Image (cartoon, rainbow, N blue to C red; front, side, top):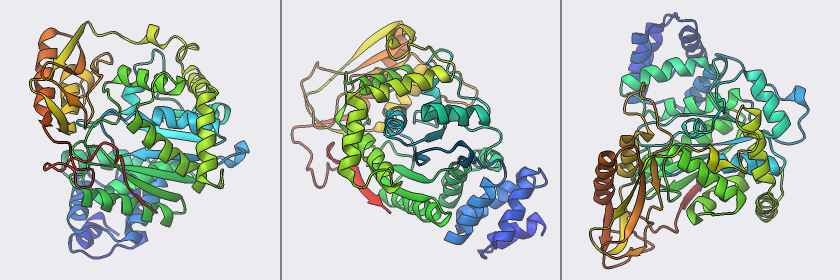
Length: 449
């Protein structure tokens, strides 16, 4: 069938057959379908949506546009699992979760992305480690997963190549937010990685990608339905992003936070809660542990014994980084020349944070990209960011900025102060504040199966 006929069907809200979708994606992969036709297809999908069966067919077609990893030849003695997040600020979960799961007997082939807008990217964080290679061959990727238990890399050219072409078009045609297209984009790569089990972390709140709780829930439900429909055990959590997940943001700074977590130096409560919830879910639904209590105990042993930190170090070394990175991490991190305290201009209880604005302040410091060609400075960012519910006096420090220049630090400080809201009364733990912010203890909002 001609591509324009498939576009016409979707434009007119007809249901596409699996053959229609497979033919169109094959044309995308073979460069038979033009950029304008991809744009028309994505726009029609944006407005008319897809049924579950259509979304499953699209996911399979995008998965099959490239190589699908086969783990059977490695005779692994544990399940192949992964998590995916819609992105947030101060979200370092992947850096701890992967080694912790590997220490418990799972195998974690994690294909991650770069920062998008105000959200930090796992690959950008790993780039702050000298020598670490996120762009490796698929064969090397599988070897590291087999030998270490976890590898975190970027999407290779062999895996779901149709997704790369479609996403590039979505990015410039205002169709990124289409739930069926997001679902297929995420799941096609996860299925191509050969996963048995996936848990999805969908953010909600001022720092989330999706603008409302309803849209976040719809995305999570779509991923769960399509993932399970494609034969991969899939569940999802809605988690709060009305404040930073960890009290820091920035690339090297967040890696340092992850090392502190793994070694026991510091485990911020919100970060720990999400990391444990996602990890426990993966260990139980994959069948590795019978109960959540057994999974939780195993995960805590992986931390207290130092095994998870050891595995993180082995992963870094296997992918080109220093062999003593965990032990000497501070020696390897780049240092920003300016340290600047952000001073509260009023007192009271911190009841609201515009998390997106905090993320954009980090981008403006050089910790993210305003344009795709921008080069990231891994040394800049924020530390010791105040948390919701904290009582502060006028003149107290609400964050510390690591910056390249005094001018950039002052500009970021003004943005951070504007993003924080104080009150004489604490937020209601059930309803949140008038602006809709949630109590900081309610980091896990909902689970979907």
